Image 1 (cartoon, rainbow, N blue to C red):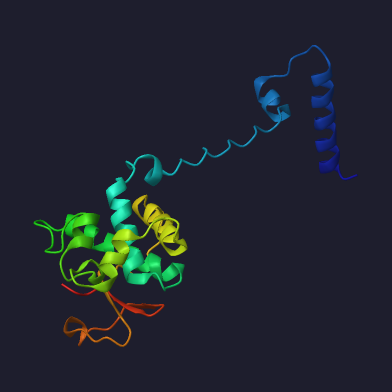
Image 2 (image 1 turned 180 degrees about the vertical axis):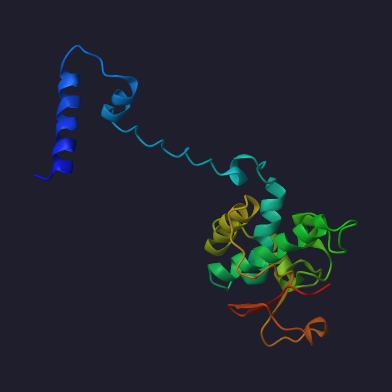
Length: 195
């Protein structure tokens, strides 16, 4: 054993011997002998605030949004229905963020019922009578109710990139003539740059 290793070995043996006797080692030696402190665990994650701190959506808002989804997108897959729900929520959010709001309204009910915005609510549209009579026994409407509840609880990711407008493929409304869609989901094209 080299002289350096021998000294180290002797010092460790002496410290161990001191630890076994009643002779308390000096504080510096005690620090060497003490086991390393356990790492401090990280704080527990905070509970999600979006669900707990947000008041539950009104029954009217859930019902109107679900009927809008059913009237506008009942033939679409779930993601397509979710995208239409996000258009409504994006309009509400954009209106609330702008001083004076937007012409399309500042609540889910106002946005959905604004004339000529969601055709299923237009008087004379064949879907209007159907959507007013549909019940949760209809599988598509039951799915729309679930999506509306998730959307209004803030638990729905936005696949549209903030779109406030959309139209079905094959229809070419004048407001969209020179715009580039930000998303294409199911049979709908979505736009986030319409004022």
